[in-house]
Length: 505
Image 1 (cartoon, rainbow, N blue to C red):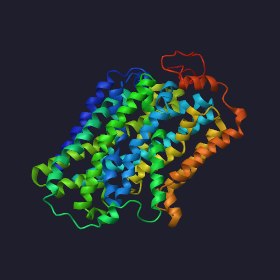
Image 2: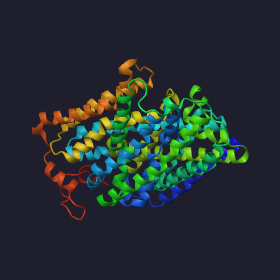
Image 3: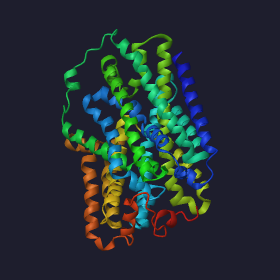
Image 4: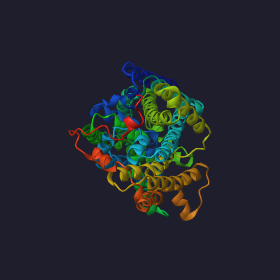
């Protein structure tokens, strides 16, 4: 019964996502529609879409699994994921929208007036996007295997094909509607079972567990370093995630971008209360998942542990549908951000913008799917946190310094992105290959952000000071554009991405 209900639920959420996305297909006609939904998405819809996109496999499954496994220290994950948007609101949202760029590489070229900086930003967007997509595909495989016994590759393939259908057909307009729908589905899928699980939890005997070590923060070796590294990665990583940043280009103006971010903070705060509840219940009633290495499945398995009969089957199926909504929404945003930069920088001049976009999205999905099927298993939330670490070490310094410091130069920015990218990327590679060293270096490799983020910022600042004679020619005009009130119309004849890179659009 559980297998049948889950299969039906996954089918329904997949079909519903395609149907909702089809509404955007009717409106997608221009290149701007495909890339940024013609910059016409209102704050309420955009906030729901951003929340749907941001709440990935790590949020739906991984946070509860980490709380189950490691205890209260892991609460910094949901806190950091949410607080990252507060920093986005303060430092990035409105100025980034005023740049009128389509992508992060567009902003790099606009601000630094450098093709080299743009090309390096393109490489980083692709790398971060793929690093983030892989755990989405792995989470889809885990969900379908846990609930139906299907092979792990099948869930990844279903997500990949559904995302391709939406993104290739209608671009940003299609996935905006789908992601907004998927946020509310995910929230409902986690919230409804809690109303049944909590009352029944009192009727079941909890397994014996040492609450003192699990509930006491900063236990274990290097706990203080690991905690602060998680905080740095999650607080700053959101500013460098390409699928998050691109969303602010879809707002009408800077004021709408700020209102969107405030709404996102509210929606994320509500959602992240729920995985914590599942993690605590899992520690009480499903601690055996730790020994079996299946902590990421605790959300999916709890209804079967505490409930029986059709109710258990239906709630498990609902959670499976919510999990698939998480994979679909996040993967859609990542694929469109990766495909967008690849289309502009590698294929646009040969195929035309829309055809290049569709081809690039297809290629990015195929390559990432192959990586996900072949990759060794890494905890879902930890894999996503590593993507945050790379983003915080590379694109975050570029955006923060590029927006707020007129002294940033192209050589300094390139040096900083290379330093932060090589350092954090090496750590990620070591973790993915299972080559993590022991002792202090093992802690640094597992959580590199506390070392690599300051390295990225410091290298950019020092490199820019050493090359101060190479400041961009139009930096004064650029800074005025980024920080002027939305009501002030500026001269549009100056250098900026829509004239420099998109004149054919």
